[in-house]
Amino acid sequence: MTKGVCGNVKIAEQMIEGGAEIIGDSRVDNLKKLSDSLDVDLMLLRTPMCSNISDVVRYADISLNSEFEVMKKLSKEAVKQDKVHRAIIMVDVGDRREGIMPQDFIPLLRKVKDLENLEVIGIGTNVGCYGGVQPTFENTEILVKLAEKANKELNFSLTTLSGGSTITLKLMEEDKLPQRINQLRIGEGILLGTSISQDRDIPYLHRNVFEIEAEIIEVKEKPSVPEGEIGQDAFGKKPEFKDRGIRRRAIAAIGKQDTDTSNLTPKDDGVEILGASSDHMILDVEDMERDIKIGDTLSFLPTYSGMLKAFTSEYVDKMYI
Ligand SMILES: *Cc1c(COP(=O)(O)O)cnc(C)c1O
Image (cartoon, rainbow, N blue to C red):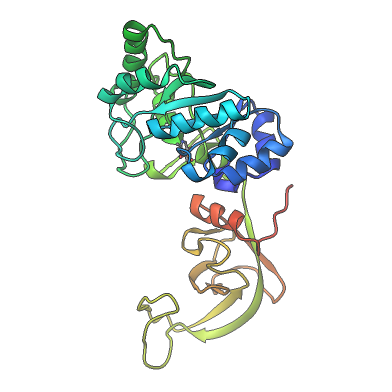
């Protein structure tokens, strides 16, 4: 899934080289970019908006769906474009983000299975995103049971059982993923090697694929506590400070416009991020071994939100090594 990197084509190509068969993204704009360069199937990860159904059919081969009205529109548009659009129906197994309730699946499938030029290929679920619900054998097995029910009651066979996202890798590792689940939609794991909602590094994956580099524009010895009456900072928060005496500090030319500065990890020992405004990141470099100078760069490892924001910011140059 490329939504964490704004549908970046070079990164999608690496995923395909690594064996990914479908590239997914939550934005149609990103799929449009990807469809110009790639010839794998593209999946829209969010239920389509009525306002851009024609682009969904044009640029996505598959979409995740939970609304009858939307699927009807997809069918109509697919007929118009003389294409077949594939749909996966999302079921809410407990997280309370997207998806129909399990008991509504068969009635919905009955209504959509014969829509023209809309091929219902599967059933899917998503957990861990809103309610923080963890995947289990039992809540994932709901998909398998519903697929079996579709077979028995409607004589309808679903080929794709889309069992979850990065958070669900854990079940697979522990051999607790129901056998019939044959698709996972992996974003954070493949990009960063982490599963932040489980507070987990995925041990068999690299965690240094992305680095954010920033140039140092000021280095000075300064008192660690501001002087004067303290109001609110530029983002409406009242800051607090610990008095550590005079410290060597540096300012990096990066800020909240570029990335999520609260979640960056400095690569160098002895660097501590004190805070940031839109365009300045303030660092304590007192404990650094090397003597940092104006014009030097420092590197940081981002979390998912830092990576996402850096890819969204047009102020951040992207370099591929
Ligand atoms: C974002 C998203 C994914 C990927 O999630 P990760 O936690 O990044 O692996 C999968 N499915 C859906 C529906 C999503 O919105």
